[in-house]
Image 1: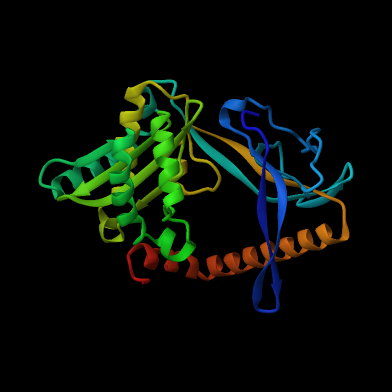
Image 2: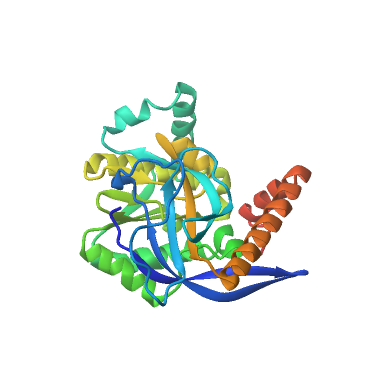
Length: 315
């Protein structure tokens, strides 16, 4: 794996009645499997062989490639093994030309994408204004414009998953820019930022970290337009191996990806009554959240809520 272990606090959620509580955080050794690690998928995750520091309660491996569906909770080699999420990790193979990439789409899909770009260009008066940011001196402007969009997105309003609004994050963005390891993109309408895309770079792999758009422009597919323009630019750079959409599934990722691999987030915790209680509590919380989501989906409410949020109906 390309990244070394880092010791981080990981929150555990417990549900008591109608309340959700945060238990004391578990300090774990954490690392994420990168697309360039070339680690073959495993049929059964095994605990790492590294020594576990005395002040750490276990390991968390994110985006581990797996074969087949994994048991959610079991004991394994002296550890409590918990697999809370299993998902398809979508990515784009960038080791080709943009023309070759476009051939992966059906003629109907290519026509739809081109039509969306033309529609927005016509709305803008005939041309599309957008910009790439990568130099250190450019990043404060990018961050200011991206934050202006992020604060009105449904990701930030509902999920608290917008572009971080902290000085520490901006410092990180500027550091990555000094190292040549970041790309930022802004789409404009009459000088107003309407969509942003933020991609840090790790060993030639572009990370799909944040994408957001102004819900007032939803009918013009500005998120899709910016993604398409950004990809064309990135392919032309000929500097990258993969565009990693990371964890989580969406129609957007499925549309643009060329490949996907089955992955899982895997915990290995020391065997103890406390850790057993915390893991079973987290599993109960996850099961409850999934059951609520499934119920809303069956009733059609989940889709309605998402559409309402994205259209700006939820303040």
